[in-house]
Image (tube, rainbow, N blue to C red; front, side, top):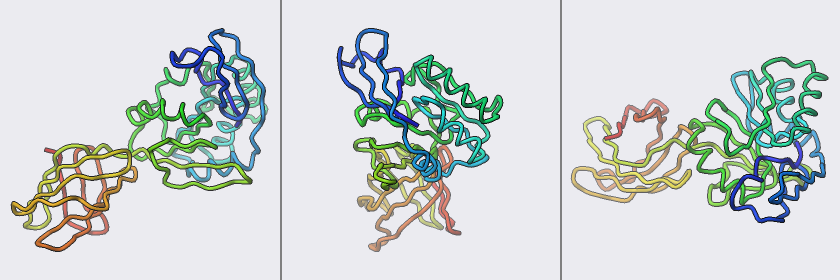
Length: 269
């Protein structure tokens, strides 16, 4: 993985002569279609750790946004046995190089490199994603990631975070910072919850992985505390009969079921 082109030259907000750091090398982006590219390869041990943190495995389809010479996609399929790997890059020379490296690695049709703008790429089939973009570009990508990726999709970024979207994990790998994000389930709205004979109404609000709102139990309203969404997992604490009760569950579309043997359920109103 390295700093790479990612389709930013067509993005309206890019300054005419801004210097952008992408994927592992520095890119000078301008209004001109020509890209001035200088590669600075990222060490393979960092690539390896990124894929480990994302827990890439045989059931995964891995997307690398700004795939450069293809090393992350190739490692995902060859070393981590991902069932499919897709690399997206705007530079035809990098796509050519990536396909040459794919051939050298002896990989087949389950590794694909596309010359494409990352903002125009359909990401919906991805279960794991890697990115090496500026924080400002990550933030511009956030709405697309949250809209198109399924809850539970793991995103690993190199060097730059997602702004207000807090990482689930971060660490330094030989001086290179790596971040893990998990796409949260969508829980905004009113939910009707049953816990034994208790009927509880939840009015939920979320900001990335933070969950807040209120709960009404037997006509008494209280704030939700300690709310957290981790992929399809949710946890929160509410007051029930004057005592704090913690709930943990698994989200499946418009339904939540209690985890750890708990019998409670919730459905979106």
